[in-house]
Amino acid sequence: MLPKDYRWLEAEPGPRMIIEALKEYGVLEAPGAADNPRILGWQRELVETGVGTYRIGDYGHDAVPWCGLFVAIVAHRANTERRPERVPPATYLWALSWATWGVGIDRRQAALGDVLVFKRSGGGHVGLYVGHDASAFHVLGGNQSDRVSITRLSRNRLVAVRRPAYRAQPANVRTIPLAASGSLSVNEA
Image 1 (cartoon, one colour):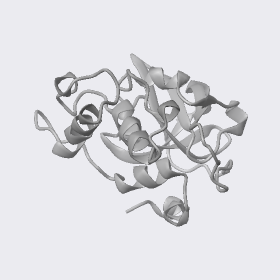
Image 2 (cartoon, helix red, strand yellow):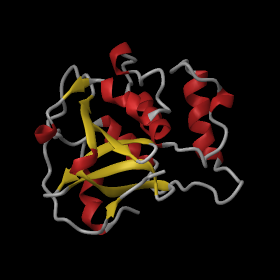
Image 3 (cartoon, rainbow, N blue to C red):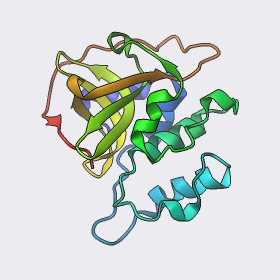
Image 4 (cartoon, helix red, strand yellow):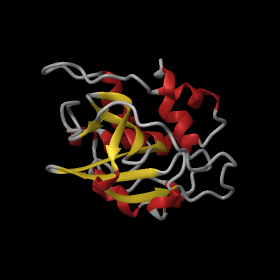
């Protein structure tokens, strides 16, 4: 169940990436050496449908950062028209590769459903914009505290804002000011 401050997302009619991401909300990485078959299944689904350059064995454990995998499965499932320009990047497991996907947007214009790419110690992080406050973006993403969740990430860490190449942009794609609540995430690995 979504936290109270984000339940309004359940009534949003789109964008499709948000709708697909919310279906996976709460999926949790398995503890220790175990793996969540649902997370590994996302990789299998992408490989079997020809997305990217990876093979099934290229992602074999949910202890490996999976934020890029999460955004890839969401983008893939949301791309109902199967438009080539909306396919995830070939190296979707690498979060920073999302910085060239879709259409570049000015950081001040980030809006619901945009893909946000961040830098972090040892690499990057990627997730979906659901709002912002004075110091942070509110991000719906995978591998955030080892689960699909919404967390606040500092605006200072932002590398890129990318919007899906919409034929007709959903009417509810808009900037969403939110109250600052909770701590900032510092490293999503």
